[in-house]
Image (cartoon, rainbow, N blue to C red; front, side):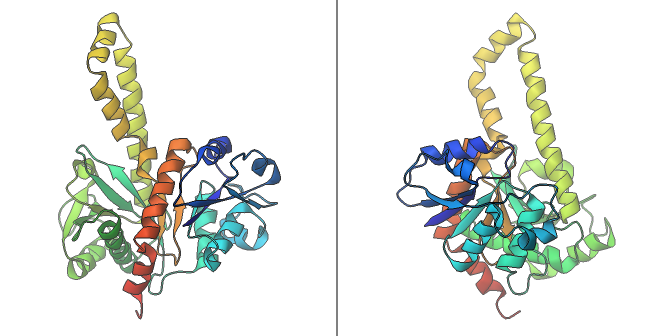
Length: 322
């Protein structure tokens, strides 16, 4: 299979270049998209270099990137994805530009009005859950949330082999009549159309792993995601300060160092792959701007699973004729 990786847009593109230089996988052919100065740093002879002359910046208008920056690494990669030169694309660049350009270049799956961003998140147990939408659409209709859940179901069935994923709608309370009109109407629609939908879920219970999928509009989902990330980082820093505060606490840390490493690993988001753009006709993965080599590795593994399971073909088939 062929995977495209955008060298530009990350906080430190050297991390991506380092990963590519070390990359070796008989199943995968990597296409690296970047400026001449970046491609010159790639020493791995098995990598296919795609020369680009423009870069997409956070300050660029997302809706105009696909027209104004046709020779950018992001746009050229998506164009190659559309015509089948690559099978999956990976970028750490502007999320808005990636989604908007993906919409214009790749197109939406028939019946999906608004594609969504989805990612796996850890829980207090060994299990993970899929959260969507993460911010692709700050406004949504009940029909959009239904589509998010249908797409998420297909993802969990194929990537994690869960035959009938359980799901819940994030809300300010468990009761059916809680929340705004969007959430009240969405609750009814999801309950009527999706098997194993369990109802509303309060944010305080989200890390207990009661469900395989959690659904939200993009505005609430983005706040929820960043809150979880921020709390995990702060909690890790607080624990480190506690265990370094005295000789006894340092000895305690040595005694439970295995458990501390496991705790840190559990909330290491680089191990969960990237956010998938659900609802586009072709598979695109968005990794964090601060992605390190490990994050790129897991995104590539995620891309391999998506390709092997024909995930996006199955999504297109599911919505065909609607």
